[in-house]
Amino acid sequence: MKSILEDHNEDKFQLFDEEAQTLFAELGILEKFRTVVTTTPINQFVSVVEHPTHFIAALHFAGQPDPGENGFLAVCYAKQKFSIEDYAQFVEQFVKDSTIIKIDGV
Image (cartoon, rainbow, N blue to C red; front, side):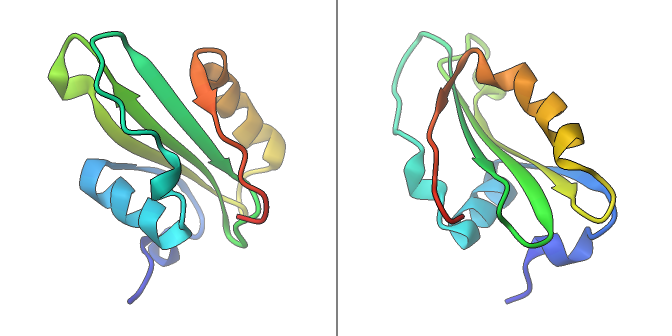
């Protein structure tokens, strides 16, 4: 099966919900997100920087007052175009209020 990342080698793009979950499963990180049933907003974040072609911010939002704001989000930065510093600026927006799970070797 062709990975969705292969179609986006020179840009930054986002995937939502089912597409994001499919990518997370391909990367072996989907199971890293905790199953959360809550009415308190919780953001979970997994950063994948060791992928060969992309920096990937994997996010899960739960407990939001508007159910439409809950779900999965992947933000992918192509390494051909963006530096780790570019990616780090984006990541800083989410780290403060997120549960951080470090995955070695992903």
